Amino acid sequence: MFYGETILAAAIVDDLMIALLEPTADWLPRLPQRHRLRDVRLTTLEDALALRDGAFIKPTDEKIFAARVYADGAAVDPDPRLPLDLPVLVSEPVVFEVEFRFFVVEREVAALSPYIRGGEIARSAAGDWEADPAEVEAASASIHALLADADVELPPVSEKLSPHLIRLRRIRSPVSGSADRL
Image (cartoon, rainbow, N blue to C red; front, side, top):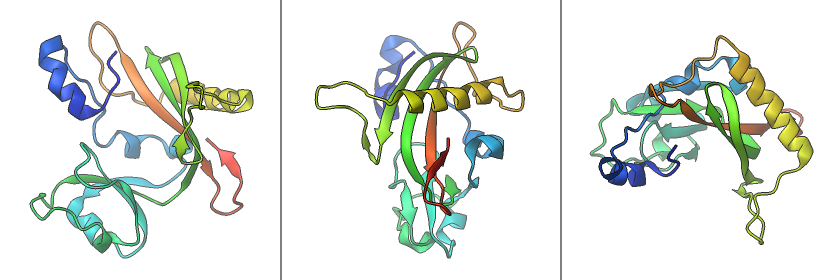
């Protein structure tokens, strides 16, 4: 399994004689709502630019404009050379309290790591990736439920190995302000 930025992967793929496998652009929006716990939809840049309310807007591939919460679609202000039919993901703004990255092979967790906590990389000054045991337990229960769900289609895999990286984030409830969901 290679884990790195898309731009680095594209630069070394030929030298390593490997194929890059990525989820389809609609994987997250097709994930059952009970697992994503928020509205996420696949649309076009043109439709995103027409949004009148605040939203998290992200290109589906590459970092060709900043993925972040915008006050409205007009605030995106993308490069005018980008095609209006460019696929983008749009979701309601939420606050992620903690993010774990799970490395999955054949629907089983092979490894996990905390990644973000409170908007910052979850690495200590000593270089350790620290996580509270209760957070690990809650995140592990959520990923196991997702992997056991027959309605969840995992992205395409190779014939020799089926690795996946799945990011699991705990969302702060917009109503109560508490951290109550993964």
